[in-house]
Picture 1 (cartoon, rainbow, N blue to C red):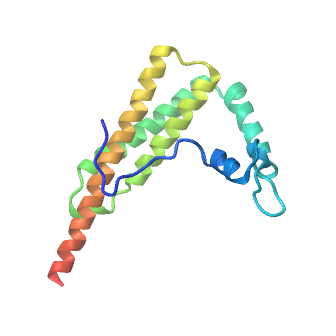
Picture 2: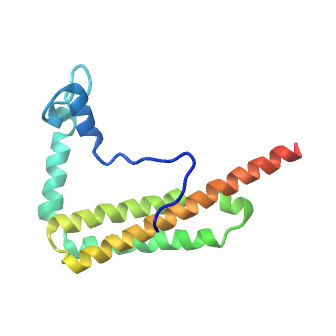
Length: 160
């Protein structure tokens, strides 16, 4: 998937909202960001960051994490394959966002495996390719679904 032409052209923020907020608030440490008048980002999210880091870097079981990755990958494939079998209204209401959620879970689990240091260079490229292929299929089908929905609305408006 080399990309899809979209109208309007979309953008992706890859810098991280926390870093943008730190720049806007003039702080050097994201945990010093003001969450509210009474709370900092660190007061709200630091314990979560620490605990999830301990899990990802030290405690996540690599074998189980791989199995969970494969379960989510299989579920994404099932959902994506099911979309191709749909017609008309079934296609317009099909839960492609559920397939996207499965893809996001695979991406996260890949990052956990990477943090544990259990992925070889070759396997890393292969896993990234698998997640990318899922994401490309979701994007292609989502665009198709949106175009189909717009066509259905236009047809209904013509008949009215």
